[in-house]
Image 1 (cartoon, rainbow, N blue to C red):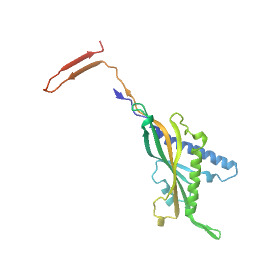
Image 2: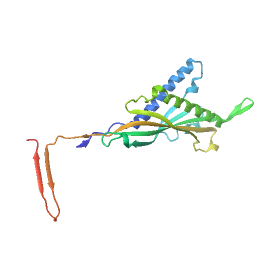
Image 3: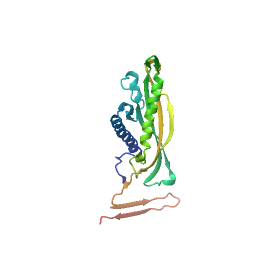
Image 4: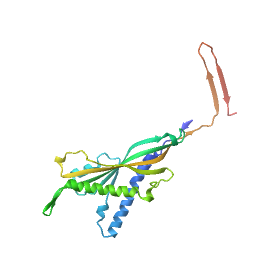
Length: 221
C-alpha cells in the first residue's frame, strides 16, 4: 500500500488563485464599462498580487503609477469536525486577507493644498469598495467553485498603516484589509493498494509464554 502521487493543489490554494482571477477579470470589465460611460478608467484600475509581503514598496522610489494595489494571501484555516471525516473529506473555514493599498503624494492644489495621506486613504477605500463589491456579487456566491465552496463572507474590514520611514520618501501609503472567510472542503490523498501476492506473518512473545506462529500464503499459485 502506498499513497498516490501528491501533485495537486489543496483547495485553499485553488480558492486563493480563483479570487485573484475573478478580481483581475472583473477589474478589466469595469475599466471597459467606465470608458464606455465617458469616465476615467484609471479610477477602476487595481493591480492584483498574490502572497506578497510588501508589494507597496514599489511606490517608495517610483510614484509614476499610484493606482491601488491588492495583495491576496492565505491567513488561516480551521477544520469543522462535525462535518468532516477522517478518511476522505474535511470541511474548513479558511480566512484570506485581501490587503488594499492606496498611495498619495502631497501637492499644491490651486490656492490650497492636497494632502497625500488623504489621497492614500481615498484610494485604499476605493480599492476596498471594488474588491468587496466584486466578491460579494451574486454571481460570485461560490467564487466560481460550486461543489468545493459553500459560502464566502467578509469577516472583518480594518485599516492599518504599513511600516516605513516616511522621512525618506514623498509618498503616503495606507492599507485596508478585507478578511474573507470561505467555507470549503479539502480532500485527503487516497492509498493505492497493491495486489496481494504473498503473505508471511511471524508472531513472537517473551519468555513468560513463547508463542511462535508462521503463516505463509502464496496467492500467485
